[in-house]
Every structure is written in structure tokens, then in C-alpha cells.
Length: 458
Image (cartoon, rainbow, N blue to C red; front, side, top):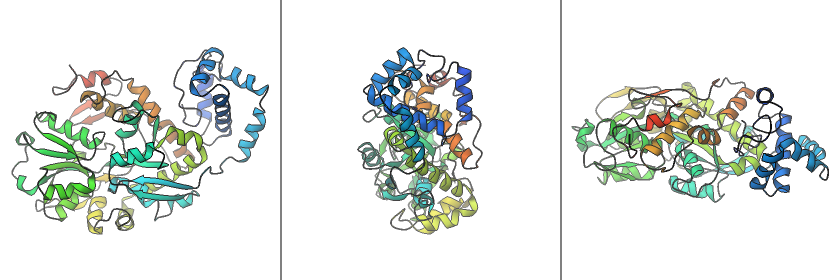
């Protein structure tokens, strides 16, 4: 299913031979999906039909009821009796590719995980696709979420769990959201105050005050996972508090917290300032884990399909450029200034190149300390949802695959990446190993119940 052909009607099946209501059989539907691309004329025509049907039948609810009874083909045929549907399609075809908006506001939190979103501004990736983007520095994730929900931001840098949480109404008003691309993989660390250099065993951390940047973050879920695997209950044996990333180093210096699992450059900045050391990199918990993302509301995608596609491509292009380690020094110079990260260039460079001081007297060489891969795997979304369920952030039952496929636009990423001459993964689900334990996205409920420390009964 593609985000460009009414992806937000997931009430299936309709009373026709395929889920979308346009084909005589599932085989015909699959063949049409395979043949189309994210920029194809057929998809454009379907967008027009969807928009008109929505208006005629009073929005999503009326449309779903009609389609459920008669199918999409009947709806389009009926409307065409009194609305010039073919003319509307022709007009849309004439303007295909024209941007609905060229001036956009995109929010970011000043961390290295936002590298593609930030660097796309000074390095010309937005302008390459005809966009005039104002990238807006945002203090923390709650602010980023709220400004996105209010429409102040057209799109935003978000933590990978945030679009899922917003879509299911966890921690905020429930609003359909999308995550077209992952910003970065790895890129986090557990940093402790220097006074704890003799407490490298997490079993010694009972009573610690630890910080994460947001409840709905990989930082929170990876920290909880790491603590629990060492027999520490994250809800009773330690205190986990939320701190905006720019405030973490100051709070560590003031000893308001004993440490944090945070995004960079604030792990490296604690080392640079001599107040903390890097206990472990997050890649040692799960190598290749997702961290941050490019996200936008479903409303923005539907109302501005050409603009969305241009923005999507600019982010993918920037991410691809950042994935080349030969470009990291150049990128560090571009994103370090005050209007972006506002950090010493050497700090950012240590993070992006993986050649860094650890605060314990050693210089480490870890080229993939942070890496950049845009593909939004559905299986990553399922893992995140299992942890939201495990720790009680979501109480009700979850249709893991449905939520994952509604929010993470992996199918669209495949099509757009192919259109750009890239080679995306052929599948959208894969297995992972997290601290030695295999995660199978086909068995999420069993995974949730398999943990000794959990808020869900085994």
C-alpha cells in the first residue's frame, strides 16, 4: 500500500475483489501496485478520485461507508455523472510535479541525529528539489511535537517512537502521523558522571538518577532494556527523568543526574568538558537501532503530495550523502555553527567520524558510532511498539503490523528510493538481536511476555 493512493483508509477489506476496491482480484491489485511508482500518473489520478469522494461523502467516515457497500469504482462512476472527474484528473496531470508549497518550516532539536535535516539547509539539498526550507531549532521533543501538532511546523525531526505514539494517542492527542524516513541509526550512548568511574556494573546503579530526552524515545526504551537485562527495574530501582538534550550536560555538571542515555553531541560534550565519560555506546545494546526520523502529519502528505515528495527526496539525498564516511568532516563543519548545533566543531567531528576520546583516557575508533540509513523498516516500528506495551505506555491491545504499516512508510520509501536510482531493501520486515536476544517481528506478543522485568504479565 502506498501513501500516495489514499494510505489512510485502512478499514479493509471492502466489498470488492481487493483491498483498495479498484481491482477484480488481489492478484490484479498486487500487479498494479508493483507497476506503479510514487510519482506515477495512476497514483495522481487516484489522489484526485480520493479527494473528490471525500468531499462528496463527507470525509473519511462517509467515504468508508459508501466504499464498504459499493466499492471505489462505483463511487467514482457515480460522481462522474455530475462532476467532471476526467477533467479534474487532466488538470491534475497538467500540474503534476508543481509544488503546492515552496516555503516550509521544518523543526529540529540540535543533536547530531538531525544531521540530514540540518545539513540539507546549508548544503543545498532542499533547494535542489525546489524548496525554500527554514530549519528551526527547537529546545526539546515536547515542543517539537506540539508545534507539529498545531501545524506551526510543516514537518519535523522526531524520535522514531514519536510518530507511533502520536498515531495511537499515547502521551498526546491522537492524530494520524507518518514517518517516511529514518534520520540515523546508532548515535546514542550512556554517559556517567566522572565520580562513577568505579561503577561500571549496572547492578551498582540502584538509586541512580538517570535522564533520557523524552518518554517516547529510543533512548528511554534502550535504557530500560539495558537496565532490565542487568536485573535493575527501571521503574523502582532507579529514577528516570526527562531532560531536553541541551540541558543534559549542565545537569550532569550540577550532579542533578548521575548519568543519561542521550543523543550526541551531548555524550561527547560531557567528555570534552571533563565532567563525564562514555560508559557504552547504544550500538553495543542494539547495533543498527533506529534513533531519529523525518516525520510529517498525514494531512500534510495528502494536501501537499508534490511538496511532500520533494521534501522526502531531499531528506533521502542528504541521508545518503551523510552515509558516506568520507563526507563526515565536511558535514561536521556545516552543522556545528550557532544557528544549528552550536557546538565545538571538534566535538561534532569526533561523533560523526567515530574517532573520539571516551573520557577514560582512551581514544576509540568506531566508524559507525553514528550512521545514516533512511529506510523505515516496519519491523523497527514493531519492536518500538512492543516496548511501549512492555512498559505500560500503551495499555490496550495493539495490532502491531497495522500500526507499523500505517505510520512507517517503508513501501513508499522503496518506490521513491528506486526512482532516485538507489537500491532499497526488498522486504520491510527483518529480525534483530538486542543484547543477545532475538526479536522476531512476526511474534510481538510472545516477545512482550518473554521478559522477566515488565509491566505486562508473562
